[in-house]
Image 1 (tube, rainbow, N blue to C red):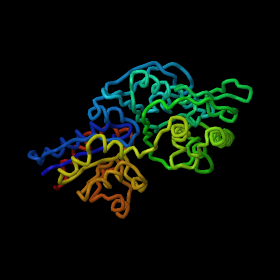
Image 2 (cartoon, rainbow, N blue to C red):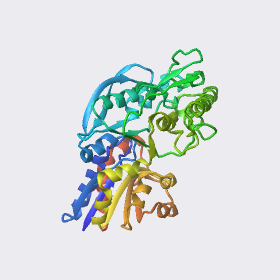
Image 3 (cartoon, rainbow, N blue to C red):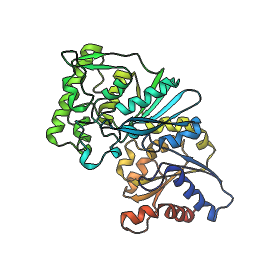
Image 4 (spheres, rainbow, N blue to C red):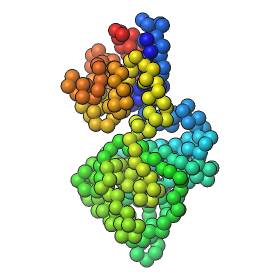
Length: 364
């Protein structure tokens, strides 16, 4: 029997490769003769670099870049021998770079992410894959664009600070040439740039903004969209995903000529998931929390859609999806790896052993 173990990381507990390893180890307890293929996956969020490293033969570049507040930090991105750069925007411009007290989306910028892309271009990269989850920013991507040569000027021709709070001051654009032959932005949300469902109002509170700040930010996003439409003739504010990562989805489209794509689809393409699924008799996947939202474009739903009718079982740190939701996702079955509710820290610490025990108990 051929088993494909294809899992994302369990957030705050285990990276994707460790999740796959624990499940495979458990399966071998009772089924030592199984043919098991381990395939760590990512939906484009944290861990993407490590997931794509084997498939793309990435080597990691460490460089000094700006964090969301402009401070110098050591960042990391991946570059393949054939010129593909893989950048996680959260590495330089992510919320984890800031303390709770430092979080204010009016003051943060994606400039550091643009520096990583610029460094990759200088090293000969022809194509860029940009994952945009986990941002601390709301600057519509002007920071990243500026690091790649764009100018953002006020009415007097002076440079405007590259932060969300200064979008409203931009009056003139100084365009730059497209930095790569192609840019793919991995994005799993469908929010527009502005409005009640836009970047500021949906995600701004978790980045430290209050209602007054979010009103200011939303106005700034509307303003930059008007300037871009008037001066560049580009109208992308309502494209699903434009509001991702504080509007970086929008900025990547209008300033970098990028294309937005679902992260899990790109990752499965690059890792050879379809070929592995064809050879499998059963696919086992996993997620930290399997709930009704797992049917809304998350990794497991995307995986089930590409399973070509092969049965898929999911193991979850927490299982709150109903039987109907589990069926809607496309799963044959789903199991919690925690038999009883325990303190979160304890459950996280025991993730590997509980994955192993649950996999060992599966009846195949």
